[in-house]
Amino acid sequence: MFSRQVKQFLKRSSSTLWPYLQRNYGAPSRQAKVTNDFVSSLKSIVGDKNVSTADAVREQHGHDESHHEIGLPDVVVFAESVQHVSEVSKLCNDNVVSLIPFGSGTGLEGGVNALEGGVCLDVTKMDEIIEVNAEDFDCTVRPGVMRIGLNNYLRDTGLFFPIDPGADASVCGMCATSASGTNAVRYGTMRENVLNLEVVLPDGRVIDTAGKGRRTKKTSAGYNLTNLFVGSEGTLGTITKATVRLYGVPEKTISAVCHFNSVQEAVDTVVQVLQCGIPMAKLEFLDDVAIEAFNKFSKFDMTVAQSLFLEFHGPALGLEDQFNTVKELIDMNNGFGLKTAIEADERNKLWKARHEMVWACCSLIPGSKPYSTDVCVPISHLPDVIVKTKEMIKEANVIGPIVGHVGDGNFHVFFPVDHADTETFKKVYDISHRMALLAMDRNGTCTGEHGIGMGKRDLLIRELGEEGVEAMRQVKKTFDPNGIMNPGKVFC
Ligand SMILES: Cc1cc2c(cc1C)N(C[C@H](O)[C@H](O)[C@H](O)COP(=O)(O)OP(=O)(O)OC[C@H]1O[C@@H](n3cnc4c(N)ncnc43)[C@H](O)[C@@H]1O)c1[nH]c(=O)[nH]c(=O)c1N2
Ligand SMILES: CCCCCCC(=O)C(=O)O
Ligand SMILES: [Mn+2]
Image 1 (tube, rainbow, N blue to C red):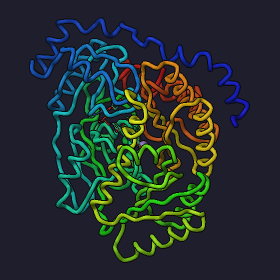
Image 2 (tube, rainbow, N blue to C red; image 1 turned 135 degrees about the vertical axis):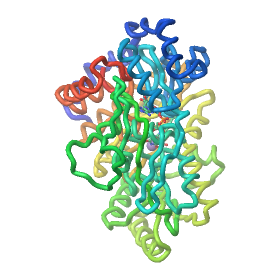
Image 3 (spheres, helix red, strand yellow; image 1 turned 60 degrees about the horizontal axis):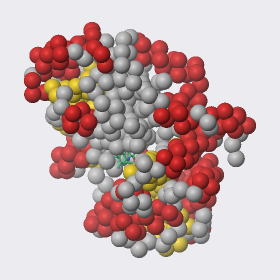
Image 4 (cartoon, rainbow, N blue to C red; image 1 turned 90 degrees about the vertical axis):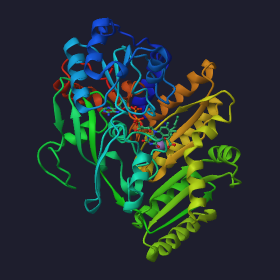
């Protein structure tokens, strides 16, 4: 199943995986510098009301939606302007105090957890939609703008921002994690959809990654600084403005569901659909275990089998043809039970239930919380990797529904885990780690969309090699020589 190299790594590391998880990250060197004087200086920049050392506020900002242990910041600062962000950054840099940008805390790899205390910089009050250029299909927003709010605002323009991670995340937080989700197979990920970013560097300087005010669909002007900051997880600077692409709301949308007797047949269908050049908007896989949870939680009565959820976007003319071609391919691969949802209510119900899958999975074990995994492989390897993952789950005797953005070769196991049950927690951690190794062994990545955060730093080294990570460390040093930006994330 694994290559010899991976087997050797597993043998060497299996006894060290758990201690790794348990490792105490707290190196209090920076934490010690958040003195009363320092807090007073913060207050003089942003005002008393925008600085909090209250336990409840620190607690709320010390974790995201992941299973990772909480990391409390010493103080939470609410910025109301770019000037606030710039002056707070400079103060932290001058005093070598950690600075952790906070969007909406929906991340899944402990990105906002303050591993060394310091200042959590909450940017949600900066919530202006600066401009919408409908004819140019772009808009520019401040970091407090949330994806659903943006789409509500755009409703009358006939345009939408398609990147949909399910959670209502901040658009700039989505830039910071390079988020994607269900629509990426058609519209791409954040990497393909960010045209420009305004970033406050740790020393307080403000840069525009594509040049001030620039918002072209293409550029070959020098290095791609924009994409350096997309996926940088708050480790290089604070994003204070993002210009992103918009798309026309499709004239017609058809959603559909069908089932298969094997993972291979489901994925073969997906590959053939893509080979036919059909511009699918969503191509989601749910395994039999996931469908069972889905039925129970969201009151559906779907056939319990390997399943595909599909969505077509396009002009009314021609969309039926696309649908019929896909239907033929489903039949060719022994798919069955094809059902469509055309009316908005029906479609919304289906996709709402898909986005609530993680809670459906948790309902399988009372008192459990989600432990999400996230790997991505070239699509030809997907059946093999999913089947082997199912074997690992069976062998470990844990519950592990599989859900995937299968059109991109990306999938998750949503393990429901009672955190007090350390034996299951350890098993789940081991499977998650092995899945990442397996994916990498098949030319894949340890994270398709959730990022590295604090959870996958060792895997990043395996993925890129020591030299690759060292190159990243050098980039980090260039932008953040004092290492204040979100320390302990991405790199060990
Ligand atoms: C139920 C559910 C379902 C999903 C997901 C979450 C949840 C809870 N996600 C993950 C999540 O939505 C995604 O990581 C968001 O992009 C995080 O945005 P926040 O604003 O919440 O950032 P959050 O505050 O969580 O921060 C995340 C990271 O970005 C940094 N950051 C935030 N704002 C910043 C800024 N302005 N400048 C610099 N750094 C900043 C932080 O420091 C941290 O490292 C996801 N994702 C996905 O890709 N596909 C999916 O399918 C899903 N599905
Ligand atoms: C709180 C756990 C969230 C699980 C991951 C959600 C996700 O990526 C998805 O596709 O759904
Ligand atoms: Mn996902």
